[in-house]
Length: 146
Length: 146
DNA sequence: CAAGTTGTCTTGAATTATTCAAAACAACTG
DNA sequence: CAGTTGTTTTGAATAATTCAAGACAACTTG
Image (cartoon, rainbow over all chains, first blue to last red):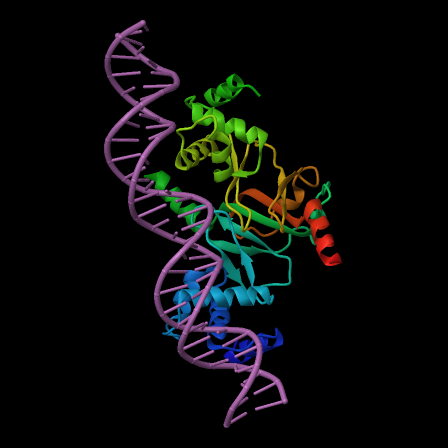
């Protein structure tokens, strides 16, 4: 995705186009499920004057505008991804924290209406799967072999 | 639940029985879905010499022993509950952070096997519902009427 | 029941992720 | 091109949680 295309994305969302915003979108295209610090590291080479706070500001703006989705798996810092609008879920490695996308499980989400909402107005169902990623499985096997 | 019964619960889990532990279990029986600070406030009257760090230590020990479940909804601090062993889920109010238990939705959890685990070994599926609790619904209605 | 061992609690401080605030600055509007 | 609005920079503050060392208490063993 070119910077021009990313700029259009920003404009369409009613946001001003700035270098930090384009850079953050670009970084998240390459490395989804990244936290603020990782994104900061990714954009720093192209924006030497930027700061971590600026990244936080950009992430907040883009998330509010609906261009980013913020996920906060237990035990890790907030992660951001560009894949939005589809109700996909996440698979998180309990060993290393790696995150992978999972398409919504049973076609729609019939199972995701709480039987008894107790007066709550539910608007979102979030599903997280916890497990061990292939890499960590190998590592664990290796370790137990010692 | 009496303190003696709570003490037995601790012993059965292979843990030493101490005042702070009994107090924390007792507090969580009364006020589930509490964070460390709330629990600290609840046990302080009966344990004047205790500290927040002690509460954190107790919570960590009890969670490791399987007596507590730790939940970490996005945007709030870690919460603890005694209800364990059943795969229930949570309903979280996006306005005030209130948490309510929800029984597992479709009988078992047939919908909670990711279609494509991508090599991950999945051991847990976590479901969180986000919505607005009855109290906050009233409050919002009130506000919009102004 | 007494002494020892192991593990827990207390005290104090450090860390990490994140947010707040004010001034300098840049993007879109007309 | 100038103005307005909103963004970024800079610097500091906050909140939740964790780390570490010594004091202490619970269960075990004799």
